[in-house]
Image (cartoon, rainbow, N blue to C red):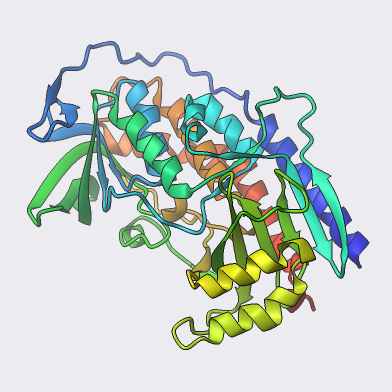
Length: 418
């Protein structure tokens, strides 16, 4: 049985990486469309932020500045678009997912000019996985022989990574990043014209743009008007941080094929290791009354490798236990003039394979290449029709990773086996 798991993992991993690397050099060629050439005027706002001279009407409004939103802001900003980016909370994010970027995602970072965002945050290189089951283990490396030595996976604190992208995006004079909560999309005759939002100090404002891109994450409160969301929650992750833990295989993710479902370990800094325990179903043991700590010590701890056991129990005793539902949602957009969904607001898959950021970054490359030739974005109906090709062009990467995530979760979870 263990051999079949290993064979399946190798096959899926190689197929996914080949698919990701195969699209890195793809380019869309467009003819007969004029490029943006006029210079942009910028102003310094009262709080010292840079923004467009015509702050009332940007080219693009981006709702949400997580991985997708901040990477998109920098990408479109580099191409000369006037951007208003509205993020609910500009303090450092503190999440237990979005910490492992696969090699295909790192290649997309390079393509977007964002590879330096994994520098100076104590990010760790990841060269593959180690699988453990019933006391046996094996090492599986990414097939990176034909790439530069710097190309690998990266693992890090999600908040540090996002803050680096905020800094890079906000350094562009035509990108205006501000804190606020978008409450609704502004619609006129079936066309999204902008957003209504509340500032940090409670002021209600409106903002207008030729295109509004909604990237407000897995908890999106705006997606219902732009897609047909069918969210499934097959399990939850229980997150811990192990300190000064020496993993059996350095610079590798560790997958424990446990009962009832997998346990993940991977480094997020030079001294910290993230542990994610998958708990099937939509209910998890209570943290408040001690049920969770008991579950982790009695059910999970005996199944982790002995080299990790003491650090794992110490992390449980420390008490900083976090939980997060694992959501999956197929992409089912309603093409809407003036608006577009991106990131987890648009499409989610089980995070077991760590493919979410790779999908988001790949989608941004596709959208960038589609928008680059356009002089302006003012004809919303025509732009909407033009961008329908986005959904086709994203499929080679997105469908591969989505299928891989769903299949591997079922294959690696004894509770899901028939």
